[in-house]
Image (cartoon, rainbow, N blue to C red; front, side, top):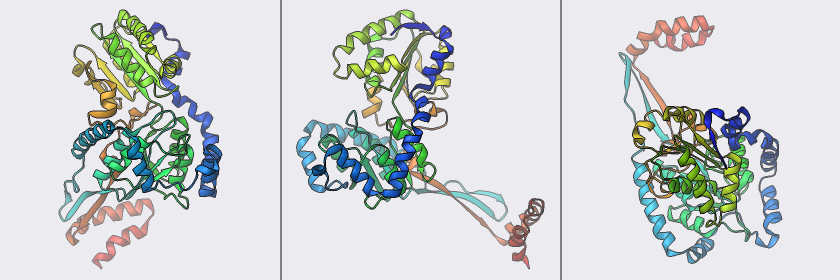
Length: 429
């Protein structure tokens, strides 16, 4: 860990930092495609074989989580978790209900007797993927299932990897039950994405897949696009902090570590106008690492895709931010609102020194399923609108069709499609 001038960063290091873990996807795609094809062809047979290989034959009864397993999960979790999940459910529901589109948008009368409008419809069958390899994520259950329910999705399928005992972690199951999920399946990774894409004898095929995952899961979701829709390529976590000389190094260090502990491939970036703040942040990281059980992972991620860079101005920081397009962007400067006004590419923005990364991850009500790997340039954070789609509607009266009849004839003639002309003309014969 060392402080550098952003302008003096070598081209090689710049590319490594900018690409972060998304740069590894091309190397893993062949392996991921092989697994996807195996699930498509063999279905449950392949999934069961993988499950038994990982967890032992005696641990497999069914991929579908039973009511007994849900009841046992409640017995194993701390009551404080239930209290925390209830507050999360309240806040996430409140925020996402406000984002629900109106069922019908404004009618536009393009000509006399012609009206065009759109109606909003929920996606009927959706799949949510909840990671569970290195950590336990009941929060991700709420972030995906709640907006799906608000949108009105008829069927919500959840897949999450089992752990060493062949079971999904109790906290994840409790969260799923608290938001009404019943189709919960014990399978994870590429196999889960493939199962929800193609369907197996046990796991239904869905129309769209939601949820974050590691590089393999992200690659699988990209391959799933050949058949169904996905929310976004939400891969390994990222945090990007813009700070000035007044920023608190302890706060910065804590938030960088909070992201770094997600995995060895997380990305942790600090841009600051103050070399002193950057140096003090590194000292704070070293101090705080000693107290973290996840310290080795956090330190490894910082060393692999981390950056502590000094910029000459906030404008320079803003330019690099918009080019990097971070998943999480924290702005710890004197006037954060002024800076965010010039940010065009970021997944979720945290303003001021008291808006910790963990606040948005868990409890503000904002969604924590966000675009990574630079995809914030063209994908929004997950929201209720992602669980539906607009359907276009139009209506012509006889007079309305008559008013555009000649335009139809001219375009049909130029495009060499005479039946198009007839489809309008025949109505006046």
